[in-house]
Image (cartoon, helix red, strand yellow):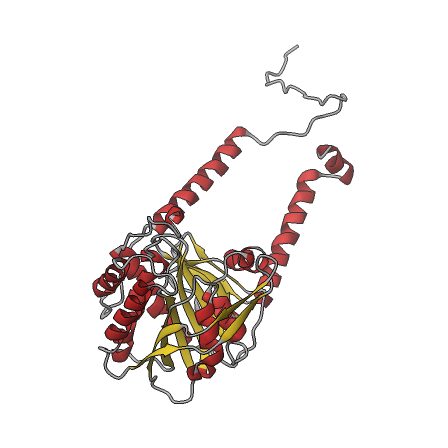
Length: 384
């Protein structure tokens, strides 16, 4: 009698004598770990990818502006260093042909911070800003507001937060004077962001040009360099306009985190503009540096990187160009999705597509889980 050779399968059982659920093979875990490691490596490399400034944009001069202003030291509201920084920005802005430039000071006002630290009211008067405006190619199409703040946290030079952005905006005036977009460009270099966005509220509620603003591009920092990250976006049309960009990174997840959690302790001028500007349904983006966050609001925020300057300039010009085709009369919507694929390109789709795609993915996952679990009784037994 011949016996068939074969490998004996060892039966396993749980503590109650029943069959234990099969474990995922080690080889499968290794494949998953390899995929995750490769994705993390690609993401890390994409953060360090150099994004050059657009042709005709003087990134070196923008970096020079930031270095000069950082040499003034901390610039909190009321200090002479802040007045010196505003005077420098005013002088440089007036060098741009065709730009209408003014040093603007607010009247009295108050901001209700109802959800921050239990709620309080910030009262201000005589808040200083530099405002510059360039006429667009078309009349009556509104304006795009480009904002950065020149004040700093106490004891922080604020090279990245937010002088790199100030330098980029000063050079953006020169760039857009030669490359006019369809809408007007309003550059606001405000002198009171660190004091709970007082200058943003003052401009939005008191400046005559505020009524013309249809889009806001806010340049911020929560680190000391790297590539720009779009962490907030107002309006589905704006998010869809960002599709295909390779200049910046971004994710709707950051938008949701800010809306649900972080907005209580980490507000920016962007949120104040959207809340206080006269025109309803203002769209826009909030953009920031995230790399080396340990330097944020500390004396270590001194680094002025030409690489980061180029990234911010490229992102700014790209976003302004993409806003050209966005209808400023579009209604604000929620539920849209945008994210970058390993820092290479931004992907986005509408709320309608999101509901279909996410619903289909959830259904496919449920069907696959049911197939793997077998009968409902086996599924319950597998989960204990």
